[in-house]
Length: 389
Image (cartoon, rainbow, N blue to C red; front, side, top):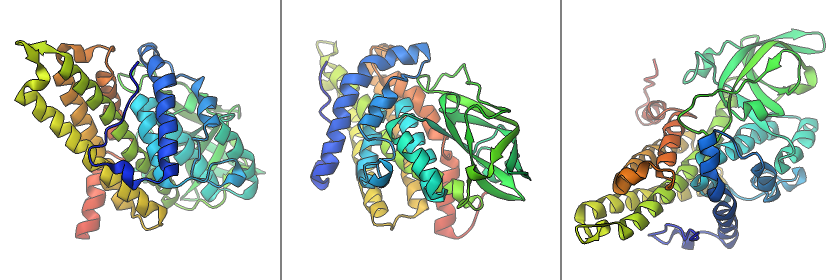
């Protein structure tokens, strides 16, 4: 197969450090060699390529920004973003796994957990020996997580948990779930471990999107969670929202990988597809579509890089992350559809990655905050008026 050469019309690589380029190229090569050759089969069969987990762990891609004392790489946020970009070029489901493991499991344990929890879980999650998931969304509460019905009550030696979560990536295969529940009216985080009595995580089937990803329900029926499994630093709804902000950052980068894959496929096809005695790339309407996609990729790359630099300086605002997630997801889905148009009927075949990316992006645009919710988050920031109610 032809190795992916990247899409970099504005020489964004010149703005990256040697370490950032090295990490990006390592993951790019891995995706080319180990993910792209197998992903269509797994997508078709609705199976997550489980064998990749420990390989990604060996590459040091889980919790990549966390300290080395916990077995992590201590890289910067731009490097993390580039990893998400390349993994999603392979498939959104692979990036989702790594994003959840890193931003929604390791991050809250590192940020809200005690030293005992960090020392036990983080090294195991970093290598892929253990898998985690994040339980916030409920059947009746998605965009309004504060309305959650899952409850924890104090009992001797710990807590009793009751409720349910839905649309949980990695849930069925997870060894630990970071679960958010109301305790005395305040949202707190709990580490619910696989095998705890009353805890089940059935897989959700029948998806037309993210078919190479595990999506689950989490069900809690009088689950006893020992006192030591409370994330003691978690206080209120702000805690899970901080985690979501980490995940949204990774998504903003990730979808650029999908855009690159669709652009590369469409460009190569347009150069080789002959109609009316010349390649369709020679026609103005096709060129307009390719130029539009390239422009949106370039804008998203520059947006992400500045966002990452701000994050590395601890100067980023959550509203800036919302803007990047909102813009890049919308444009990624739009460009996937345009790329499919360039490929014509061939665009629906799994010989090409475009339709798979398009189907995945339908979910990616929705999860971790819908397009509409991010619009209102930014709207409140610039006007001073909250329009959520």
